[in-house]
Amino acid sequence: MVYEVGKRLVKNHGYDITVLTSMIPQAKGVKHENIEGMEVIRTPSIYLDKLPSFMPPPFTVAPFFPIDLLKQDADVFHIHNRFWYYLGTLAIIKLLKRKKLMLTIHNARPRGISPTTDSTGGLYDDTLGRVIFSACNRINCVSRATMEATIPNSMHNKCAVIYNGVDTKAFSPDKGGGSVRKKFGIPDSAPLVLANGRLVTQKGFEYLLEAFAKVKTEVRDAKLLIIGRGPLKEQLEQQAKKLGISDSFFITTGIPEPDLPKYYNAADLFVLPSLYEPSAVVLYEALSCGKPIVATNIGGNPEIVSNDCGFIIPMRSPKALREKMEMFLSDDSLRKRMGAASRKRAIEKFDWNIIAKEWDRSYRQL
Picture 1 (cartoon, one colour):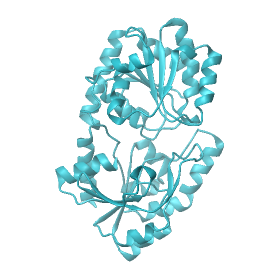
Picture 2 (picture 1 turned 30 degrees about the vertical axis):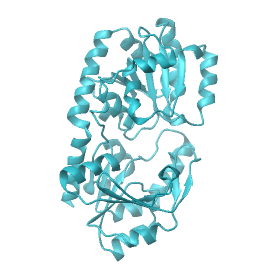
Picture 3 (picture 1 turned 60 degrees about the vertical axis):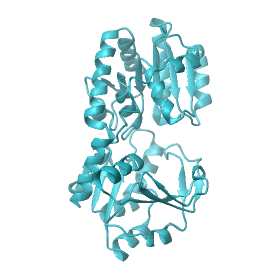
Picture 4 (picture 1 turned 135 degrees about the horizontal axis):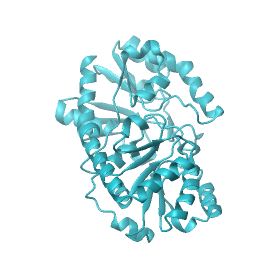
């Protein structure tokens, strides 16, 4: 979001943007650079990429961040991860600099995943998180569900919903998927179901595999491809073996960003069986590529996928997953109609240029 919105605010709205962030391995030691008109400053950090499942990796510890923050000046200081900033950050921005503070909530308070995940994730919001929320002049959330689950009702008057977005030119139905099918040996005639997400419990892939095994009894040549990496890879492969679908199930990762649209376009439909999903980027990408969608009734999913674009189903329900997948795979006209509606929705509501305009309004209202 920072990159896609930031470059458009600079180019189209005349903003001067500085991004202060952690040094990560992918930056290859570059401390300062200009990216699409934004000045990027990286502060030394300790990079952690092995974390509990409820914390999306990576996470960094940046001991010199307060020093680098003191060197910056701006009309608005905008933070994007409430779990990373502490009282020292608030003191610098609000007390020493006396500047306005904006927060974006990207990750909702976890609910319904597991007792451990729910309690651990909620503990922060009930303590330090509440202090951060109180200090902010404005809080923008990536879905209404995220706002309602995370921000106390007494603070909703300073909150707004600004969704994630998608580059509708890059994620376009005209980016062919034939090369992807060829890579995995999937015939053009074989129905292909695509899913995309980290291989962790809250993505619900175990329910998708169980449902897909049932689909195979009716649609024998169907294939399932999951894009993702994570600790459950071997477990999912073993589950597929036990279900007798190993020859129709693929997991892949490490896809270059320009090639990602080809994977969506290779598929006949997109499925997101998650147990927790504040505002899934993969849904915006699937919409933009004109895919019909099956997604669970949690988090921001029902706000993103409208009734004319796909089906919203209960989570942890292999039965519902099977029914909707079979409905799509057996009805070409339904897939085409909902796929066209998906593309239209992406262009009209979620293109990054539209989202950048919403951010411009939000900043100017401070």
